Image (cartoon, rainbow, N blue to C red; front, side, top):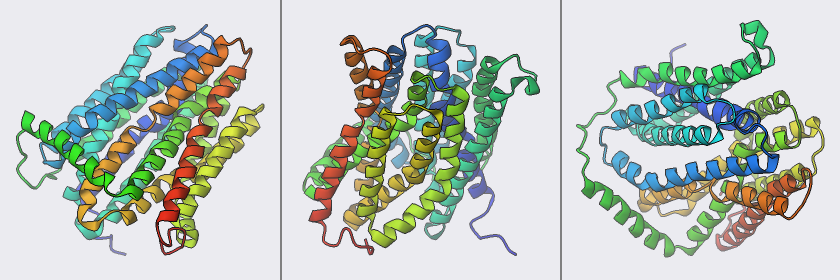
Length: 432
């Protein structure tokens, strides 16, 4: 049976980069960094305080990315050495991921700084990576190539994460002294994995046009374009309300992704159980994203998104009263059912709302809103927990209040999205 025409050296190299850097999102960002930050780098610190530190760390990383996004977007949009900037940000992320291996016990400040810089490398590289899709595939092939890369990322990130989990659960089998060394080597393995599998895309002749030169006028143009687009969006009130709703609920989604493991640790759950729960989310999420797309076609995209938000709201309230690891597993599986679907349907809904002739301009603004996600949520969790703790609430009560504060973002997003649905004729119908 012949291979699809879109499968060639360039497209496979493109997919391999997703395979490469998805390990950072699974093993580092969602998995072991929160565990090590609380149990090793913040050893002896009150659980509420360490959660607040992690929340502020994630918020700072998100803010840096949001501030850099217009500049990086301008560079990417004008085709300025995309592969070189991809390599630059990849090496930044790889270097600081490997550097986590060397951070000593109790040194949470250095760990936080390295994590922030590694996250900047990860997100920055993705921006240039995404823009290369138009170079590696023809318009009619881009959907398939993008799906191939997405699947490769899910599989590659999941496989390395599964190996890293095995190392921590049975370190002696791998010749390691204990779980601490296993986690440290996991950080190193992510950096090496990312480096090796990102090499193919650097050796491919992808950029078809001669790269432009970078100069300060381009950066000024980027900010002018952002201002112009914002004025344009303001003329479309329904789109503006949708973007506000999207920012609220997607911030809640990303906050749960980054803070769930830390929360479980604060409740006294075993780190091995929490990491296993992340694997459940990973493998439930892959088929569920496809099924959620089918649901959107059946009941309407906005109705499906609002259903997902309600599930997230219930999960947040459920988490505030959790007592056992089994309940955490149930929560992880439930999140996996909606995590991919809510993001995919949000993008599709926005695409159906905007004027076709302004799609590139409006999607640039949509991506900007996404870059500002996971800033307010982690800060809200951190501040709520700290205020409750200083008010004298004992035990895990302050931590539970902190995680429950995310529900405010889901409620506000759900209400705003309902307003949007009423403004779009047939928005809740399946043809949307």
